[in-house]
Amino acid sequence: MESNDKKYIEVWEDVVDMKDLVLSLIICSITTMGGYFLAPNDETKPLIFGLIGTVIGFIICTVIFKPKRTFEYIEEEE
Image 1 (cartoon, rainbow, N blue to C red):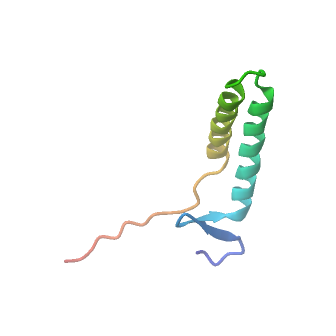
Image 2: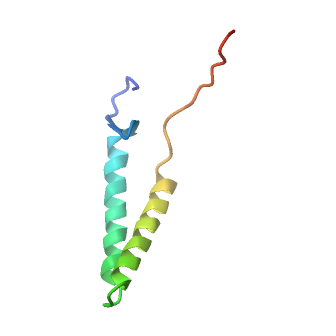
């Protein structure tokens, strides 16, 4: 982890910024619940609209939050 003053936590063996994680959860929750509550009152439509809201939230989060890691390729000497 970097030594700067950002707060990072480990999720599924990857390090993420706590602020970005919380904002992503909020955005995806709002779009999912928005799709669910905007759906017509039918048996399957709330589920479909909720899933569409989840995908929209995921797309929004991938546009807003960019990866912060860098990769360095080091060749092994033989």
